[in-house]
Amino acid sequence: MTKYNLRTAKSEDAEFLFNVILEAMNPVSITLRTEAFDYDKEFKEYLKKFEPEKVSVIQYEGKDVGRLRIVRPKESIYIGGIQLLPDFQGKGIGKAIMSDLIEESDRMGTPITLEVHHVNEDVISFYQKLGFKGMNYLEKKLEMKYTPIFLL
Image (cartoon, rainbow, N blue to C red):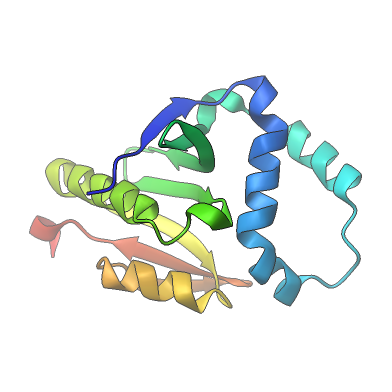
């Protein structure tokens, strides 16, 4: 399995993490965007909501390569965002992270939930191969859920 590390983000990681989101989500954003993108305005909005202690920086081979936000309410493990820089996609990093989360889900008996843009068919397929099922459409997103093995 691909080795990766997670470290808690720091305030100085804000611009890097914002750019990870932009680069990773660019194909989806181009499809969904209805108006011109204003980097400075969007970055200021991102900073208003940025809570570094709730975000992890994904590291691979000693480099910062992505972003992961997990929320753990009692009833589920919610993936609030996982993005990798394009140069690091397809290297098994995302699959390794998801495999670890699925193992935790199975061990704890806690489902995993997440949302994917409905136009992001490759990512929807990726999650389906891992055992996630589509649950509900929420505006432009598909809510997906992984149910632990012993709860099936």
